[in-house]
Image (cartoon, rainbow, N blue to C red; front, side, top):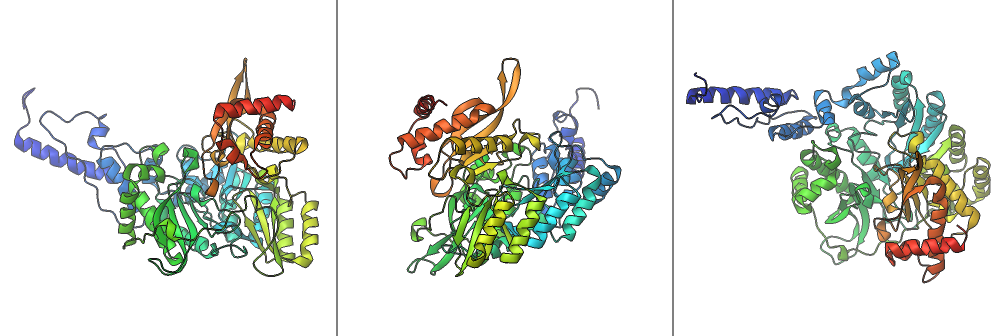
Length: 607
């Protein structure tokens, strides 16, 4: 062939076949296409290179791999995390974990993500150690596992446990050399924490007072447990493009805040005379991700309890197919719903489910019982006559291993051998007879925990902060306690208020749904940089659902207690009635007026 001479038809046909075959082979091995391999250059003149075919795969990992194949075939570039998962499934990393432990070294690069599939997170530079996240369906923990977790914290970690906002436990300060032994010990305790982090379905949450709540419509414990075991036993549930959350709310007094989850199942009573038989059903909500300022929305779909787990599996499979593998910032379910629309996505769910989903207008359901905003704290009668549950506050979710063992002892001696974790970083002792209440309350006091915290302290949530997370510029747990200490010292807040302190845009403490929310910020003051926050107000969930708006920006941490005091004083001085909530007050005023009111009241109070 002479220079500048076009290819003959025979040559074109040969080259097209060669390149197409090569692209198929490269795609199945996780390698870039021909065009990508040569820097995205166009094919030779006159040659049209067909898109590589998507090879039909088999086995439990096939859905995720084929989703990656389709992205490659479309000429897109997978993220480094997707490329790493493509080369070796993270659940198959055990030999690497053992080797790292034997050599006393932490994972690097994309191995950081892979190790999270086994429940261990290298959290340097905040702590040069592993943090481990466990997994308890619905936040229900038998005392032998709760006590055993405390023992693990002493044996491998820092001697304390953290309760998370997914009604879960975390253990910190685990050295590199202990990684494999620690995981083995967790499994020997009967805890399967595979997929407790990274691109997985996180701990399944449910109503923390399930089965004991006098006002609940349905006990969520069986479904939370069934969903947990469905995930554990279906490997394709680990082929996600990003993290995923599922929650069941049974209509009890303590909320599961299911509207902040990717899938929220909310119990509703359907009366007689409707299109479906009378009974308690779950309405399906989809797309919650409050860190991206969005709540799960009702789909119109209503499900019998026995349908929920299989439908959730179908939703996850549709998400595996459609989730973005090229941009992790847009990989959550919300963005699939934004792109396809709810009805088109539900059509894909029905395809995976194998039959149509039932729809029912919201108006055909009876009103739900009201949530008790701080019902996770204090002494409350159960539906079982003569028994009570006690909601206990820990300092922003943290307790020592000795406190944890003492709580397990109380649950064994006076209760039914169960600890209930809540999304409020608190816990509940249940099934306490009236005759034992005084002894249990005294024991809680003696161990330095609270069962009767103030309105501010009862709704105080804080993520790990820069003491244990590299993303946070501020020490959220310490600053949250300083806020509560200050408010309790200078004023009495007579209605429930939730204050959420989060360190970064990941919003683990969900600052957008707090009455008052804070997000960490590094603030420049002269030549120095200090820890601080942007302060938001007016967020809520459930009946108070709303995204908080920014009120104050770049507030040094040292000034946050006074700023929050001024907001609370403005509310209590200007509310229209004694029962007007903080959220209702905030919604009545534009931001500029709220700032002026807070500053004015603050000046009068000397704040």
